[in-house]
Length: 341
Image (cartoon, rainbow, N blue to C red; front, side, top):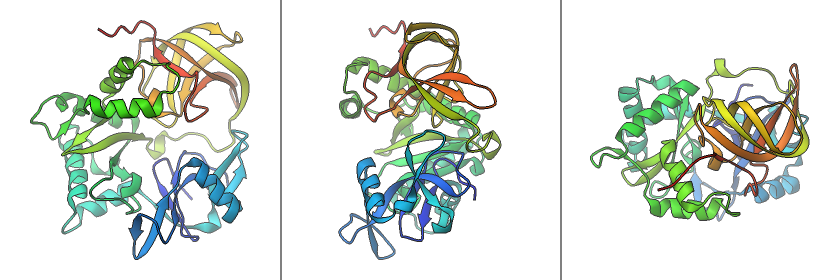
């Protein structure tokens, strides 16, 4: 079975899980529980109701009801979620869902906004429709037409960069159909994400505004999400394992940031100076938190702090991992010489 990040899995147990990675164990699809059946749930589909669950609720629900969805991951060495192959009912594709939306005779207001974004990226960025998709709650049809955001997917890392460049070119034009996010919204996000002062509010807004991966379409928030094309996905599950080696802080130059919006976001490094921790040949910074994806560009000098991991595979190397907890306390990626005027 093939599944990649941003796909959803609908199971024979009436559960919806979101695929979180590209490489999967031989017996299951690694994914994260998002929606569970609930007679009092706020989301409805085909006469049934569902509730969206957070991380702790998801683990608790599976432990109590479907423990076979949990497994000890040999790669990360922690307990993870994944749908056993014999429990998969259907793999929901963002590409297929977008095509379906285009074929609707009378799409609702939210889906019309999805169509608008897709048409802009096709017309202005030159990205073919087969490289575009829609994920989030719209993919399993569990969205609220009045309140849901749009998780728009662009396949291919170079295509994703082109889409962001298109958005950047139009976001500050008041007549544009796609516009920048207001600072009122960033204030809410900052309060939710930053719990330890690693970034000031002004710094946070500066980074988010220059990323060009989030905006507004006719009053609705949208994300431009990156997912690799099939031919960009390399290796197999278990090729590499990760050994924790404590904490490390570095100063370094970003040599490649093409995968800075991938999952995980990856920054390849050069000219690395160790500021804290063991003196190891660090190759990259990886981040599993939205806050630090797209944080730096090629040629920029950064400061980074997080968990040091030894990556063991055909070639053994070291990486700095940001986002080991939801709050990422004491972990960050930021420019060394950023000055907010």
